[in-house]
Image (cartoon, rainbow, N blue to C red; front, side):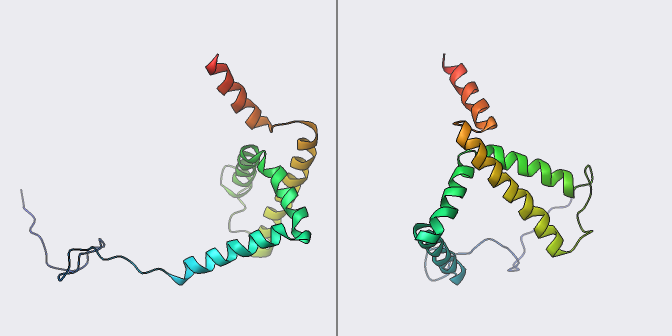
Length: 137
């Protein structure tokens, strides 16, 4: 059985401690992190401004049934783009794919808004709540 010997190469991907200090090497803050924080602040300002309130209200209604929307979107996109469905992956250009994703999302927002006017919970949220309350009793 051959034995392996440690090599002195620096191909290891783990961060190494500096030879002069005992502190591990830490990656510096990246400008991308600052960019994401700025974008998030801008989105919050947009949603708090008068024109963005309407968008915030629509998204909030969809957020009340987020699990239902997530599962529905996952099933629809899986059936559209994978081999066990329509296998559209790689057949269409970027514009067609974005349209094919944004149109069902807009439809989901419309259905969420209609459904939240009539019921308190989305279908999957209601099932989860019923299962949770049934276990407590």
